Amino acid sequence: MQGEKMGFQAEVGRLLDIVAHALYSDKSVFLRELVSNASDACDKLRYLSLTEPDLAQGDAEFQVRLVPDKAAGTLTISDNGIGMSRQELIDNLGTIARSGTAAFLKQTTGDQAKDMALIGQFGVGFYAAFMVADEVRVVSRRAGEAEAHEWRSDGRGEFTLAPAQRETRGTDVILHLKKDAAEFLETDALKRVVVKYSDHIALPILIGEGPKAERVNAASALWTRPKSEITEQQYGEFYRHVAHAFDSPWLTLHFRAEGKIEYSALLFVPTAKPFDLFDPTRSNRLKLYVRRVFITDHCDGLLPAWLRFLRGVIDSEDLPLNISREMLQHNPLLAKIRQGVVKRVLSELQKKADAEPETYADFWNQFGPVLKEGLYEQNDQGDAILSLARFRTTGAETLASLADYVGRMKPEQDAIYYVTGETPEAAARSPHLEGFRARGIEVLLLADPIDEFWVPAVGSYKEKPFRSVTQGGIELDRIAPANGAAAAEPAPAGSDALVALLRLTLKDAVKDVRLSTRLTDSAVCLVAEEGDIDINLARLLKQHKRTETDFKRVLEINPAHALIRALAGRVGDKGSSDRLSDAAWLLLDQARILQGEPLEDPAGFARRQSAVIERAVAGG
Image (cartoon, rainbow, N blue to C red; front, side, top):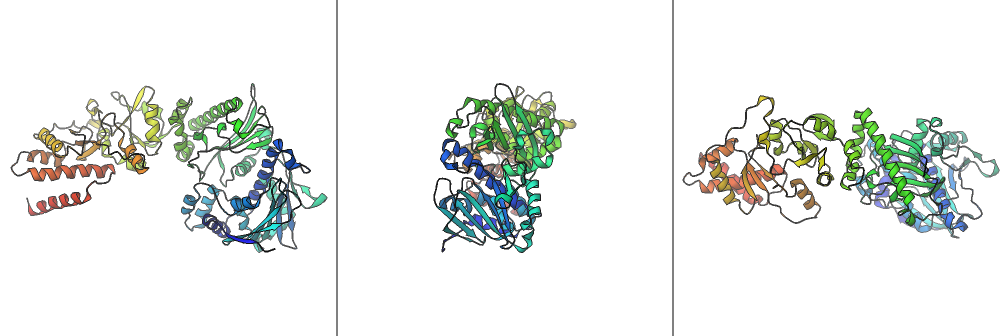
């Protein structure tokens, strides 16, 4: 029957090209992905049938069936789950409506090994079929509908949709296998793959047709089994099933809560950062079951957004089976489960941080920015998150905790100092750090956007306030220079007059001009007046069009710098006013450049710079 041809969404076409041509080391993972999808389809129908029993009428024994056909060269993966309508076939197989897809695909390079690593983070799902198939047909009938439809494609840019025949609800995925994938027509090979990857799936997986079909998996919910009976390999395969991931779990948490409320949890912290970790919805990906019946994988009340990197299953004994997803959000039992899970996860992370600091550093580099969101949200776990937080600093090569930092503070130091930047390396280059380094004062190097928000929200740690080094009001003179370095020289004659001249010249461009105690090498820097918005935060807000305000800053000049000393010596010289005026604006522009801010008047900067160079060359 002639069908309607449609083109793949551009992102799907690129994804298929990578999957179909990448030399993945174990192509059998395609079967894991397709069986996992079939299992999900059955879980969804099982949940819907609690309130709409007619949807599963006549065939309530959910199963997945694999049917190899050597004569036709096909392998069919069939389920009796929820099925798909015509529009759902288009939406699910012709487009990727997941936020971040385009950004993810921009990271692909053409290097097969690197691209497959990215694919692993993304989760190829259905498209893994094209690793082994020249053509894929999908025949599906949605539960409750009379019509079936066929989706067909060779993965080369187009797919075809046509009416089809299917006696019952569910989906058949028919793979026309490539010649080098003929092994997947052998029953023994299919058994090995199912046992390796899908033994944990909690519904029967059959191989063959009719009464001769053989069940090949244990079909028991893994999270209900004792930990002593489960191998690391089984945990790993269950993680890859539930997370649709290709990496291995960094941490596995398997526990059962008993008492007033009872639930089982099998949770995983990924090793690799999921591609949608910073999706604006900030949704979690945990699956909620009630007495082994799947309820939903979109329950935001189950986990705070700042733990959304977790994957896995929570199975409640107490929630009602027929609870709606809307009612879930306000259920007090769910709130108690959430509280218990959060405490357990943070406790296990703390144990890992204490016992394996180097390994924990890998976790923090991947998921620290997300975990720190919990500090900004001001919840009752703030102290636990602060204990888990790790930072790059100017005083150590390895990540440091706040407890480490406080333990290394100078006796005269009364605050925890930090500097923000686009990267830790950029933050470490800030001229504001010069005086702190000269005195051996350690400074936290913060580079995550959330740092601009949680630090002022938290305010202090162990009664030590957080202070930005770019803020005014910091009195470094109270702390002696480190390693016996000489104290700063007194300001040269003419310094006060120079400050007055700079104030007069720059009066509309800066908030004030002051002599600096924080600079040792640079001539100038900009600082935020005490109580004003931090400089890096203002830049972030402007970048994201959250403010149009131009915040005036204080210009600090270093009286010990040769340039400032020379300028101070020229104040009052006959005919120096124009030159000093040019110098004033050049100093301000230099400070802006050091701060990473754009110049307000690039043409004026170029003109003044040319004039100064011209006078220098002419010996004037």
